[in-house]
Length: 248
Image (cartoon, rainbow, N blue to C red):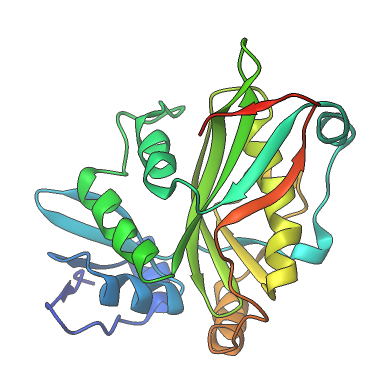
């Protein structure tokens, strides 16, 4: 099977199920990465994995790792951090800093980053449209001032949050952001978090896998449902020591 080229301004995607059977999940290739293409892709269970030679490669994966917010598991060690360490977790305070940090951190078994400047620009547009969100974790530095220590970002359509990438510059920073963000998202009305890849890290939080057909069924149901409240911008959770100073 040849891989389809996706023409500009036509945001329809070929059947991802066929791509999973015949091209190892590669659904199509495009020369654009605009907001319409991205939103159409996520609704179909497709995401851009990397760029090469000025083209963007769109994939689906099966089985798909997902997390139901009500099944979030916080282990003993992280629960202790949440009780005893000074931190603040925020939403959408510094989206571009978070995605830039995710792009700059080395990843095991990866040469470079898939979050090229074109990806950062495209997701910043989605953020401006209210469809991409970041969660930030601030930990105190040596002087007792809160500094950005970790976080993650993703795309939200209806009651689904599609996680994309995270980073940590301090132990437990991204975990703290995630553990605090999931209940917050549930309170906003989120019903499903797409984790994409099945990893031990996410399994510890309670993720599980579903086949792609079941994942698509959930998307068709949930993408069109509105949130109870907007995700917004501001503090999500905090456990701060007296006298802690803030420095974003």
